[in-house]
Figure 1 (cartoon, rainbow, N blue to C red):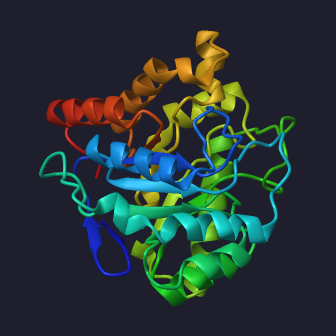
Figure 2: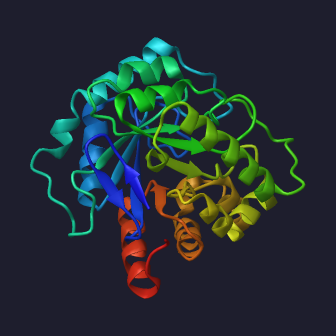
Length: 291
């Protein structure tokens, strides 16, 4: 299995990838967003030095208690960051030989209007689409520009809370969802090895749903795609531990990474890159990699 990017690919099995989060916004749920591009680049350099294989930059918070920002503003924030991506890499060195180098730049957006503006040029190698792919527009844009596409499981409109969603069998529903969406990607011209799947923890899922997904994560191995586990500081961790402040949930995050590494997780999206890198490297030495 491999992840095909515009001008390279990443082979699996290997040590799972650490995806660092950089929020170019002022309303991140974890309180770490910034509209200051200099500060965003500083955070990026810190995460790369800490071992990040992927930097996932977002210009809009995924919080469902906030309205969507204007398309033009989201594009402006992305362009401001992407134009200076090379500065973040200037003088940087990999933390160890297993780190993906140079790190992959991922753009976190769900709107095709934004995607069409940020993919040309090839700097963005991965589109992280939290919109549950309601149609094939983002898939077609990724196929056109050679970018990989991450497909996240959810239901309904992005930026809208779905707290009343009920599942008889969340994993069975998720498997049907990925069958449909991956077929849509193929029909749009996207190579099979240019897709990543994401179970969408906390999106249209309640506490027990999220726990069931983490317990049964290995079922997603049937798709032979890299699996992203975006577990960092999630609400489900706070609910289990009784911790309201997301910034106090890093220990629970590491526990979920450890569990997911033994159940087929390939990529971990995290706020605390150094802690995740240490955990992943140690666990890889103990248990190896997901296939």
